[in-house]
Length: 217
Image 1 (spheres, rainbow, N blue to C red):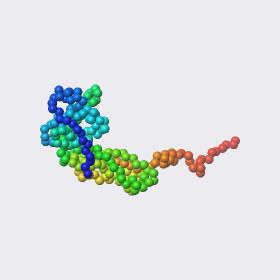
Image 2: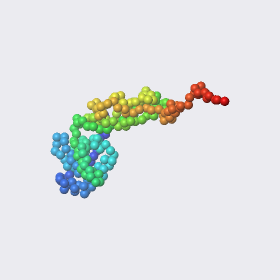
Image 3: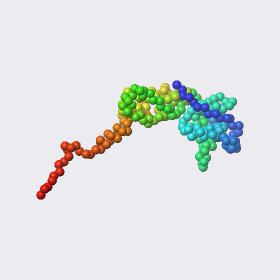
Image 4: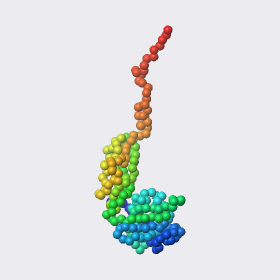
């Protein structure tokens, strides 16, 4: 199931070079270039406010966009570089690469949780901790999943969910080459505190208290 790819609206930039780029910035835009995909590079302008918001949202360099430019066919792109002002740290230029549907791309995919009602650990008061609410996967651009699913059915307190227990979409692969933890079920904090106090209680039982020798002389 392909995930929803966000639109990124830009306009074609008529001029090229430093002069055209400076004019674009004066007009409230960030100049950019779209390359690859077997076609000629396309100079574009993106409204500064639009790009700045996308950058603040995070994951900009690992988000696949549907680039819409008037007079051009929509194309899937991924950002490959954002140049910034060395003093203000604001974007001054952006590079995008066109992707084919068969291209491989690295993206962060959200984790969806199911089976909570059939989870013994949760029924006993356990707490679900999402170690990784998103997982970085290498996927095919034409088959990006909305999410990956973890199933809590049958899990007890102390159990963990690792990437090896997840059915990944066809062609998808985690970028981390080990069986990392996605989520775990832990005991309630009150129970943990009680157990900790019991473990550290050094007071000996009554029958083990040493006798005190009294010298009456």
